[in-house]
Amino acid sequence: MKRMRYLFSTICIALLVCSSALAQDDAAALAKAAQNPVASMISLPFQNNTNFGVGPGDDVQNVLNIQPVAPFKLSEDWNLITRTIAPVIYQPELTPGYGSEFGLGDINTTLFLSPAKPGKIIWGAGPILSFPTATDRVLGTDKWSAGPAVVVLTMRGPWVIGALANNIWSYAGDDDRPDVNQFLLNYFINYNLPQGWYISSAPIITANWKADSGNKWTVPFGGGVGKIFRIGKQPMNAQVQVFYNMDKPDNGPDWTLRLQLQFLFPK
Picture (cartoon, rainbow, N blue to C red):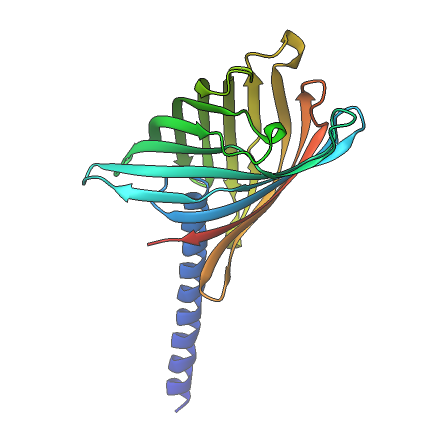
């Protein structure tokens, strides 16, 4: 009887250890998929950026980016990853007499063609399209714009390191508004820890090539932490990051607090 109890206890402990290992492996795989812009996984991130020190009055601007990601299998060798950003913006009064504004900004969609069976280097490339969907002229460009986009990354052990870049030019829209020529570079460095935790730095560097020489660049530096977890059976990814702008336009923010909650839908 004692031997049976001992055997039963040993089996139970082994099952618990295996269950814990599987949960850990699952969290690690989900974390890497969430950090991969061209992962073959449906996800719905809500990324909120609160910008402090905006304009001459050192006001607060808020941009909530709703960013659905949907992959499509084109063949055994290729996937098409669609990434859309719909910004909901609160814009403080930057010019006296114009007031603050709240509404939808310009929506953009990126279509990444990516190998279905990537090697050590994971990549995707395709067009980015920007649409004049802003509900107020101060929230958007009133221009139709497009350009190339590319993403390259690698996963080595606990590390996920890469960069996403694009440049858009306007080709139609309101002739009274300035033409668009804008660059974006989002590099990301992630170090994954046990139990779904990770350390991340993913600043978004931008350049407005049409601006004056001292107002072209926004260059943030910073980072934060994130965690993969579940609410019931639903996998989630939450993170917080803080960035200080080392270079910025005259009316640009001094620093940014980013909070993100992402719904993950693995196959």
